[in-house]
Length: 411
Image (cartoon, rainbow, N blue to C red):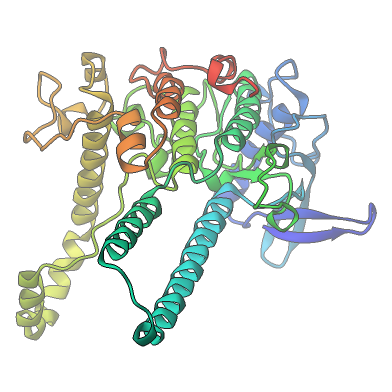
């Protein structure tokens, strides 16, 4: 994606240039059909069933204020072949950058406070020979320091809840529109939710909710309700359980992703933490050293088994994901037996294989104990998120239903 200048209209735009291989051209044609539908709306022509005309790739229509607007599409032919070029409106930063900026600001503020405290301690030490402190006063000071340490542990919402509500309403309106166009985004994540404004134009000390209007972007992997291009969809942390086990999926996978995004914006943490453990076992280090002399002999065997190893790692990661889902939402229903890969993960009773340790928890429990949220806020957030995380894709809340939830009512 490039920032470009539209010389005709004298403004800046976002320019996406597709690669020239046939597989990318086919993908671009599918994306153009989806973008046309987005711009024309749910009552527009069904471009899914219309043959693509490469001589007329242009797109027109009003679209939706919470979905990225496509301005133009054209084809560039050069030495490397045919390139589809997409011209989008230029908007602000994504929600991942917003989250990271706020976390960074908090760390910088904490560092500044720590330095100030250290300077105060030095001043106190220098004056110790002329200062007399009563024992009782000293004990009181120690108690106050303990209280200050406890205050440092207080987390609460990373982003103020009113701002989160505004962001959520904005994103769900766009998502509701996309779904009513019979389209599934398939890759909702903080990076694909962009602020209309740039962060440099937002006062993060005041956090005015109306500064946080959202546009859904990147429909390059989107598909139709009745026509999926692949089953390898969604970024891992935001992947719905039906996708993991190979069950029939639809628009509700976007709702699952949205719930994970909301939790991440509230806490700064993933709802399902799938980060790898980088620590190395001492025995592994010893084995690595011992095997160095035989590295040439083992290279060929490693290459032969690399594909199997990758599959095993993916299976282990998916299993860990399912363990965390069970910890939060309880056991999987028997309806998941109607999936392609359920036997890879479950026994006949739909219990996870191998009897893994399950640490039962709830969303409100995590928010209160781990993130120090107010119990009332935590319960309200849980009441909003749980219907978005229903195991059954058909019973999971829709974007329209989420928008009518009491938690999203204006404060």
